[in-house]
Length: 105
Image 1 (cartoon, rainbow, N blue to C red):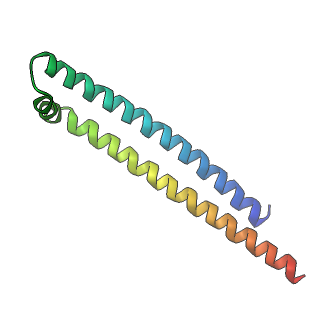
Image 2 (image 1 turned 135 degrees about the vertical axis):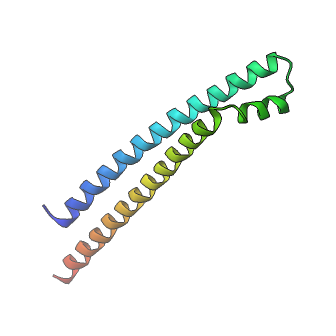
């Protein structure tokens, strides 16, 4: 297997990892936002103002752990994105190297 093929394989793995991490992040973010909206709506139905309901949501005992979980998934997705960019750059470097070697021959 040539170095270019290895780079393409690594790039393919990086693409799959990025896709998976983004799907997981967006799934959890959507669930968090839905949960947050449901709690806020419940407070507003009990005659709390919008601002008061926001405060009550953010002081809910589960809010911090849910929020931090979504943020950690966001960081993982961004890390996967950077790994993807590095894999692409490695492929570009290897491709350029092979083109240059062909031109020298």
